[in-house]
Image (cartoon, rainbow, N blue to C red; front, top):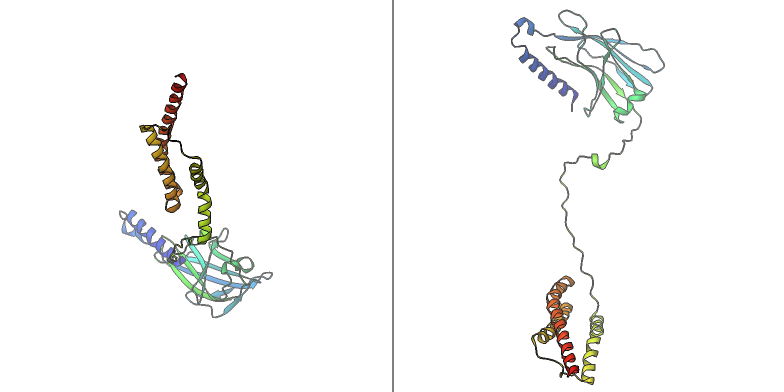
Length: 296
Protein backbone atom coordinates (compact mmCIF):
# COMPACT_ATOMS: atom_id res chain seq x y z
CA UNK A 1 0.00 0.00 0.00
CA UNK A 2 1.18 3.57 -0.70
CA UNK A 3 2.99 4.85 2.43
CA UNK A 4 1.48 8.32 2.09
CA UNK A 5 -2.01 6.86 2.02
CA UNK A 6 -1.25 4.82 5.16
CA UNK A 7 0.04 7.89 6.98
CA UNK A 8 -2.96 10.00 5.96
CA UNK A 9 -5.50 7.37 7.00
CA UNK A 10 -3.82 6.64 10.33
CA UNK A 11 -3.52 10.35 11.09
CA UNK A 12 -7.19 10.99 10.33
CA UNK A 13 -8.30 7.95 12.37
CA UNK A 14 -6.29 8.85 15.46
CA UNK A 15 -7.23 12.50 15.11
CA UNK A 16 -10.93 11.63 14.97
CA UNK A 17 -10.61 9.34 17.99
CA UNK A 18 -8.71 11.96 19.94
CA UNK A 19 -11.28 14.57 18.96
CA UNK A 20 -14.10 12.43 20.37
CA UNK A 21 -12.20 11.75 23.61
CA UNK A 22 -11.49 15.43 24.17
CA UNK A 23 -14.89 16.79 23.13
CA UNK A 24 -15.64 17.75 26.76
CA UNK A 25 -12.41 19.77 27.08
CA UNK A 26 -12.28 23.56 26.65
CA UNK A 27 -11.95 24.88 23.11
CA UNK A 28 -8.44 26.18 23.77
CA UNK A 29 -7.18 22.70 24.58
CA UNK A 30 -8.23 21.37 21.13
CA UNK A 31 -5.74 23.58 19.23
CA UNK A 32 -3.12 21.53 17.36
CA UNK A 33 0.43 22.19 16.24
CA UNK A 34 1.08 23.25 12.67
CA UNK A 35 4.22 21.49 11.38
CA UNK A 36 7.00 22.94 9.27
CA UNK A 37 10.32 21.47 8.10
CA UNK A 38 13.48 23.53 8.35
CA UNK A 39 17.27 23.15 8.16
CA UNK A 40 17.02 20.50 5.44
CA UNK A 41 20.52 19.36 4.43
CA UNK A 42 21.29 16.82 1.71
CA UNK A 43 24.64 15.15 1.08
CA UNK A 44 25.58 12.62 -1.62
CA UNK A 45 29.17 11.55 -1.08
CA UNK A 46 31.66 8.75 -1.61
CA UNK A 47 31.58 6.10 1.09
CA UNK A 48 35.14 6.88 2.22
CA UNK A 49 34.75 10.70 2.08
CA UNK A 50 33.39 13.26 4.51
CA UNK A 51 29.85 14.41 3.68
CA UNK A 52 29.36 17.91 2.33
CA UNK A 53 25.77 19.00 2.85
CA UNK A 54 23.68 21.25 0.63
CA UNK A 55 21.08 23.39 2.36
CA UNK A 56 17.61 23.23 0.81
CA UNK A 57 15.23 26.07 1.48
CA UNK A 58 11.78 25.22 2.85
CA UNK A 59 9.10 24.50 0.24
CA UNK A 60 11.64 24.52 -2.58
CA UNK A 61 13.45 21.85 -4.54
CA UNK A 62 17.16 21.39 -5.10
CA UNK A 63 17.85 22.08 -8.77
CA UNK A 64 20.72 19.61 -8.95
CA UNK A 65 20.06 15.97 -9.86
CA UNK A 66 22.50 13.78 -7.93
CA UNK A 67 24.01 10.58 -9.33
CA UNK A 68 23.62 7.69 -6.91
CA UNK A 69 25.23 4.25 -7.23
CA UNK A 70 26.59 1.62 -4.87
CA UNK A 71 29.77 3.64 -4.27
CA UNK A 72 28.00 6.52 -2.52
CA UNK A 73 25.95 7.31 0.55
CA UNK A 74 22.94 9.61 0.76
CA UNK A 75 22.35 11.53 3.97
CA UNK A 76 19.41 13.79 4.66
CA UNK A 77 19.10 15.88 7.83
CA UNK A 78 16.16 18.04 8.84
CA UNK A 79 14.30 19.55 11.76
CA UNK A 80 10.57 19.46 12.33
CA UNK A 81 9.36 22.64 14.00
CA UNK A 82 6.22 24.12 15.46
CA UNK A 83 5.31 26.90 13.02
CA UNK A 84 4.10 29.13 15.86
CA UNK A 85 6.91 28.73 18.41
CA UNK A 86 9.70 27.89 15.90
CA UNK A 87 10.89 25.18 18.29
CA UNK A 88 12.13 21.80 17.08
CA UNK A 89 9.82 18.94 18.03
CA UNK A 90 9.67 15.18 17.65
CA UNK A 91 6.90 13.60 15.60
CA UNK A 92 5.43 10.14 15.41
CA UNK A 93 6.10 9.57 11.72
CA UNK A 94 9.13 10.72 9.75
CA UNK A 95 10.03 9.01 6.48
CA UNK A 96 12.24 9.62 3.47
CA UNK A 97 10.73 8.06 0.36
CA UNK A 98 12.51 7.51 -2.95
CA UNK A 99 9.72 7.54 -5.55
CA UNK A 100 10.53 6.36 -9.08
CA UNK A 101 9.51 9.11 -11.44
CA UNK A 102 8.15 6.88 -14.21
CA UNK A 103 6.62 3.89 -12.41
CA UNK A 104 5.75 5.49 -9.05
CA UNK A 105 7.42 2.65 -7.15
CA UNK A 106 8.48 3.71 -3.65
CA UNK A 107 11.48 2.76 -1.50
CA UNK A 108 10.87 4.11 1.99
CA UNK A 109 13.37 4.66 4.82
CA UNK A 110 12.68 5.72 8.39
CA UNK A 111 14.27 8.95 9.65
CA UNK A 112 15.43 8.76 13.27
CA UNK A 113 16.45 11.66 15.55
CA UNK A 114 20.13 11.90 16.39
CA UNK A 115 21.02 10.87 19.91
CA UNK A 116 20.40 13.71 22.37
CA UNK A 117 18.98 16.05 19.71
CA UNK A 118 15.78 16.67 17.80
CA UNK A 119 17.47 16.66 14.39
CA UNK A 120 16.25 13.84 12.16
CA UNK A 121 18.74 11.88 10.03
CA UNK A 122 18.07 9.39 7.23
CA UNK A 123 21.22 7.73 5.92
CA UNK A 124 21.24 5.48 2.89
CA UNK A 125 24.27 3.32 2.11
CA UNK A 126 23.64 2.20 -1.45
CA UNK A 127 26.04 -0.74 -1.22
CA UNK A 128 23.81 -2.45 1.32
CA UNK A 129 20.48 -0.93 0.31
CA UNK A 130 20.51 -1.17 -3.49
CA UNK A 131 18.71 -4.54 -3.30
CA UNK A 132 15.62 -2.61 -2.15
CA UNK A 133 15.51 -0.87 -5.51
CA UNK A 134 15.32 -4.29 -7.25
CA UNK A 135 17.30 -3.15 -10.27
CA UNK A 136 14.86 -0.34 -11.18
CA UNK A 137 17.13 2.47 -12.36
CA UNK A 138 16.20 6.01 -13.29
CA UNK A 139 15.23 9.28 -11.65
CA UNK A 140 13.74 9.15 -8.15
CA UNK A 141 12.00 11.97 -6.30
CA UNK A 142 13.32 12.30 -2.73
CA UNK A 143 10.27 13.10 -0.61
CA UNK A 144 10.02 14.02 3.07
CA UNK A 145 6.86 12.57 4.64
CA UNK A 146 5.98 13.87 8.12
CA UNK A 147 2.90 13.16 10.19
CA UNK A 148 1.66 13.26 13.77
CA UNK A 149 -1.73 12.74 15.43
CA UNK A 150 -1.28 15.98 17.42
CA UNK A 151 -0.55 18.02 14.30
CA UNK A 152 -3.06 19.92 12.24
CA UNK A 153 -1.27 19.10 9.00
CA UNK A 154 0.94 16.49 7.35
CA UNK A 155 3.92 17.15 5.09
CA UNK A 156 4.79 15.49 1.78
CA UNK A 157 7.62 17.48 0.22
CA UNK A 158 9.69 16.63 -2.85
CA UNK A 159 12.95 18.25 -1.80
CA UNK A 160 15.33 16.80 -4.40
CA UNK A 161 15.80 14.35 -7.27
CA UNK A 162 18.46 11.66 -7.63
CA UNK A 163 19.44 9.46 -10.57
CA UNK A 164 19.89 5.92 -9.28
CA UNK A 165 22.07 3.34 -11.02
CA UNK A 166 22.08 -0.11 -9.44
CA UNK A 167 23.56 -3.48 -10.25
CA UNK A 168 21.55 -6.09 -12.11
CA UNK A 169 18.97 -7.67 -9.85
CA UNK A 170 17.87 -11.31 -9.84
CA UNK A 171 14.64 -11.75 -7.93
CA UNK A 172 14.52 -14.65 -5.50
CA UNK A 173 12.20 -17.44 -6.65
CA UNK A 174 8.78 -17.26 -5.05
CA UNK A 175 7.25 -20.47 -3.75
CA UNK A 176 4.18 -21.60 -5.61
CA UNK A 177 2.24 -21.68 -2.35
CA UNK A 178 2.97 -17.97 -1.80
CA UNK A 179 1.77 -16.80 -5.22
CA UNK A 180 -1.69 -15.25 -5.14
CA UNK A 181 -3.29 -15.37 -8.57
CA UNK A 182 -6.75 -13.87 -9.06
CA UNK A 183 -6.97 -14.72 -12.76
CA UNK A 184 -9.62 -17.27 -13.75
CA UNK A 185 -8.26 -20.79 -13.99
CA UNK A 186 -8.35 -22.68 -17.23
CA UNK A 187 -11.26 -25.02 -17.79
CA UNK A 188 -10.62 -28.58 -16.67
CA UNK A 189 -11.69 -31.06 -19.33
CA UNK A 190 -11.87 -34.68 -18.27
CA UNK A 191 -10.44 -37.12 -20.76
CA UNK A 192 -11.53 -40.66 -20.10
CA UNK A 193 -9.23 -43.49 -21.00
CA UNK A 194 -10.03 -45.02 -24.33
CA UNK A 195 -11.13 -48.66 -24.18
CA UNK A 196 -8.43 -51.18 -24.88
CA UNK A 197 -8.29 -52.63 -28.33
CA UNK A 198 -10.16 -55.92 -28.55
CA UNK A 199 -8.42 -59.01 -29.95
CA UNK A 200 -9.39 -60.38 -33.33
CA UNK A 201 -12.43 -62.64 -33.69
CA UNK A 202 -10.24 -65.69 -34.38
CA UNK A 203 -8.35 -65.32 -31.08
CA UNK A 204 -11.58 -64.73 -29.14
CA UNK A 205 -13.32 -67.74 -30.64
CA UNK A 206 -10.29 -69.96 -30.06
CA UNK A 207 -10.08 -68.92 -26.42
CA UNK A 208 -13.83 -69.53 -25.94
CA UNK A 209 -13.57 -73.04 -27.42
CA UNK A 210 -10.60 -73.87 -25.17
CA UNK A 211 -12.56 -72.69 -22.11
CA UNK A 212 -15.57 -74.79 -23.12
CA UNK A 213 -13.47 -77.86 -23.99
CA UNK A 214 -13.72 -79.45 -20.50
CA UNK A 215 -17.52 -79.17 -20.57
CA UNK A 216 -17.68 -80.57 -24.09
CA UNK A 217 -15.38 -83.41 -23.01
CA UNK A 218 -17.72 -84.12 -20.08
CA UNK A 219 -20.75 -84.42 -22.35
CA UNK A 220 -18.84 -86.63 -24.81
CA UNK A 221 -17.78 -88.97 -21.98
CA UNK A 222 -21.35 -89.08 -20.66
CA UNK A 223 -22.60 -90.06 -24.10
CA UNK A 224 -19.87 -92.73 -24.54
CA UNK A 225 -20.19 -94.23 -21.05
CA UNK A 226 -23.91 -93.73 -20.70
CA UNK A 227 -25.93 -92.02 -18.02
CA UNK A 228 -27.32 -94.04 -15.11
CA UNK A 229 -30.63 -92.58 -14.02
CA UNK A 230 -31.57 -95.56 -11.86
CA UNK A 231 -30.15 -94.08 -8.66
CA UNK A 232 -31.73 -90.69 -9.24
CA UNK A 233 -34.64 -90.19 -6.88
CA UNK A 234 -37.38 -87.80 -7.73
CA UNK A 235 -37.44 -85.48 -4.72
CA UNK A 236 -37.38 -81.80 -3.86
CA UNK A 237 -33.65 -81.93 -3.01
CA UNK A 238 -32.77 -83.70 -6.25
CA UNK A 239 -34.79 -81.28 -8.30
CA UNK A 240 -33.32 -78.25 -6.48
CA UNK A 241 -29.73 -79.47 -6.90
CA UNK A 242 -30.00 -80.17 -10.64
CA UNK A 243 -31.89 -76.96 -11.31
CA UNK A 244 -29.25 -75.00 -9.36
CA UNK A 245 -26.41 -76.79 -11.17
CA UNK A 246 -27.80 -75.96 -14.59
CA UNK A 247 -28.49 -72.39 -13.40
CA UNK A 248 -24.80 -72.04 -12.47
CA UNK A 249 -23.76 -73.28 -15.92
CA UNK A 250 -26.20 -70.81 -17.47
CA UNK A 251 -24.77 -68.03 -15.30
CA UNK A 252 -21.25 -68.78 -16.56
CA UNK A 253 -22.54 -68.59 -20.12
CA UNK A 254 -24.21 -65.22 -19.50
CA UNK A 255 -20.98 -64.05 -17.78
CA UNK A 256 -19.10 -64.59 -21.04
CA UNK A 257 -21.71 -62.62 -22.93
CA UNK A 258 -22.53 -59.53 -20.87
CA UNK A 259 -21.91 -59.68 -17.10
CA UNK A 260 -18.87 -58.48 -15.19
CA UNK A 261 -17.16 -60.31 -12.34
CA UNK A 262 -18.97 -58.50 -9.52
CA UNK A 263 -22.41 -59.06 -10.99
CA UNK A 264 -21.58 -62.72 -11.59
CA UNK A 265 -20.42 -63.25 -8.00
CA UNK A 266 -23.61 -61.63 -6.69
CA UNK A 267 -25.85 -63.94 -8.73
CA UNK A 268 -23.62 -66.93 -7.97
CA UNK A 269 -24.11 -66.36 -4.24
CA UNK A 270 -27.88 -66.33 -4.70
CA UNK A 271 -27.83 -69.55 -6.76
CA UNK A 272 -24.97 -71.32 -5.00
CA UNK A 273 -26.36 -71.31 -1.45
CA UNK A 274 -29.62 -73.20 -2.22
CA UNK A 275 -27.73 -75.46 -4.65
CA UNK A 276 -25.24 -76.36 -1.90
CA UNK A 277 -28.04 -77.10 0.59
CA UNK A 278 -30.00 -79.23 -1.92
CA UNK A 279 -26.85 -81.11 -2.94
CA UNK A 280 -25.96 -81.83 0.68
CA UNK A 281 -29.44 -83.19 1.42
CA UNK A 282 -29.37 -85.21 -1.81
CA UNK A 283 -26.08 -86.87 -0.87
CA UNK A 284 -27.41 -87.66 2.60
CA UNK A 285 -30.52 -89.29 1.11
CA UNK A 286 -28.40 -91.36 -1.30
CA UNK A 287 -26.16 -92.47 1.57
CA UNK A 288 -29.17 -93.50 3.63
CA UNK A 289 -30.58 -95.46 0.68
CA UNK A 290 -27.30 -97.38 0.36
CA UNK A 291 -27.32 -98.22 4.07
CA UNK A 292 -30.85 -99.58 3.87
CA UNK A 293 -29.90 -101.62 0.80
CA UNK A 294 -26.95 -103.23 2.65
CA UNK A 295 -29.03 -104.10 5.74
CA UNK A 296 -31.63 -105.78 3.61
